[in-house]
Image (cartoon, rainbow, N blue to C red; front, side):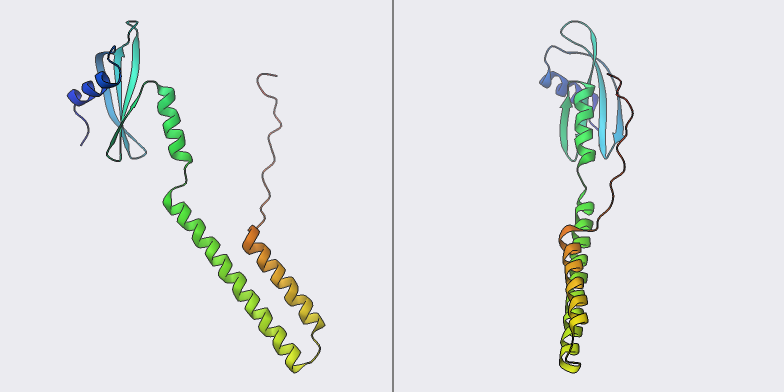
Length: 156
């Protein structure tokens, strides 16, 4: 349930005693948070905005829009738990593939040495497979980075 106007007034007073309440707007839902925009007159009798955010049971106070923006910027740049979990699962899967390829080539090599007696070609292939699998498992798949922008900066 969103904060009441009295609770918002209390939060504003608690964080900046010189602010005089004028009005509020909201709450607005942004990224699973409720954002209240509060209009106050500051210590210089100028209109100013304050922001109160209800996020996961916490009440957060922001003196300026810049600090509110920085909070949401940090919030969005953090990978979510599901992204971390997916990255871990992908790494685990690639390790299983690398282990399977290693066992497969080791088995083929053992068979060729035991049955054929000469396995120089198979040894070279198995060794290349082990290097490729290990490289993929430890360093990941190589993906080219997009080209950097070469446009001139506005400051010259």
